[in-house]
Image (cartoon, rainbow, N blue to C red; front, side):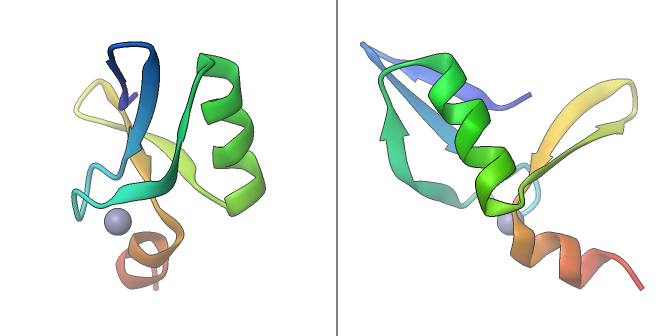
Length: 62
Ligand SMILES: [Zn+2]
């Protein structure tokens, strides 16, 4: 998954569009909470977990 650590902050990045979440997080689990709350999805792609923002989910699914 793409929750990246930058110093003492965690940043959530969409693996499709590369967009970053509006918020950064001081705790890994805050980032996970944000994902659930805002409708981000984790999906497995070529054996790796990707994080996909709500906008890219709508674009990608029929
Ligand atoms: Zn996206």
